[in-house]
Amino acid sequence: MPDSPAIQIDDVRDAARLLEGVAVRTPLIENLALNARVGGRTLVKFEGAQHTGSFKFRGAYNRLARLSPPEKAAGVVAWSSGNHAQGVACAARMLDIPATIVMPADAPAIKAANTRALGARIIPYDRLTESREEIATRLARESGATLVPSFDDPHVMAGQGSVGLEILAQAQEMNADIGQILVCCGGGGLVSGIATAAAASRPDIALYSVEPENFDDTARSLRSGVREEVAKDARSICDALLAPSPGALTFPINNALLAGGLAVTDAEVRDAMRFAFSTLKLVTEPGGAVALAALLAGKAPPCAGARVVVISGANVDPALFAGIIGGTD
Image (cartoon, rainbow, N blue to C red):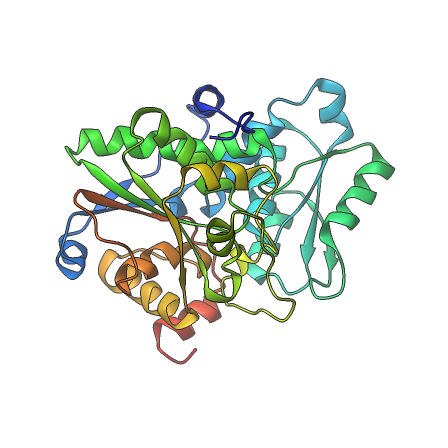
């Protein structure tokens, strides 16, 4: 581990206590057809069942609930393609905090609509020509609001780590000896939180980040030891995982604790979404399906114990989902 990691196990446990009774304890699912397909016991952690349809609620609530009364009155500003936006909007509504979200103009319509429905104000931007961080920072400075980053924040990271504590407890309840965990990765908040949770009691578990192939900055960074960036012209259907580089706070933890990074194609993601729907009976968004895609495509390294695949979200536009399920997209 780095000398002073952004979060430690006590932070994750504290976040889990704060979230108890507020966040959903999402299911860890075993499916016999999936076991047969991959040739070993596999458990699916389905964060699509979380409030707002993704794991992002956990980190958002853990961050917002710790604001002082004057900070809550001044409001919060976040940037997000949709899942963090909804998580912040939902937590803000629960805690009676004004929320402004900087969202790309091409964000999935369902994510923008849900964010507005939760009471947040949306500021659109062009993800190809404008900086979401600069826009959000300016808005926060002008209004006195608190910035809530989507991954590079200790409280956000610790909240996401509660997923890891649940996985360990649920696997024990199922008499499953975990050998490997596959986790989607954008900026690295979820996987760094899960890695922190797992390393405290099960450092033998091999954790792998999974990214879209054109956004494999964490995988490349793990190989080089420095934070790599995504090419400016990179594109993917995985809108939730398009961070330009690993987080300054998340990467040192991931560099110390992860066994490696994997990457999947958009075609493999589509196949995983179809499998999840037809066999697991789960709706997944593209970014939420990358870990399952890596497993189904045979990209996960050999594992002696049970595998855990984290499906991180289920917020997909109906038209896109229908096209993928029907094989026309």
